[in-house]
Length: 143
Image (cartoon, rainbow, N blue to C red):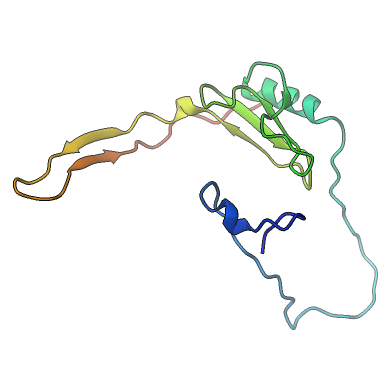
């Protein structure tokens, strides 16, 4: 079960995010024999603001990198660009393996919608039927 050390369960956040529960159980093919080999440890090196600034150069995101409005010591998030979906943004979480992601609302076109009128005498209120176009355009690169 995903939860924070304070004991708030993942279900409490069901309205804002999709949580997935994993139970990792070793299979019968895992040996308990001793041996030697390479072991790798992922480490966060450097400064999160420097990393965001460098990623911003690659992705063309402008602005000043800084803590996210949602920053918390338990979830140290940083952002470059607007957090209100008004332009390209890079987000970085400075914990674990340091996941980051790029988003650009301009890549998502407005949906095409048509109004569905209620049938006469029906209790149905009608509504809208919308289709979302596929995002288009190349991904940014160093080339």
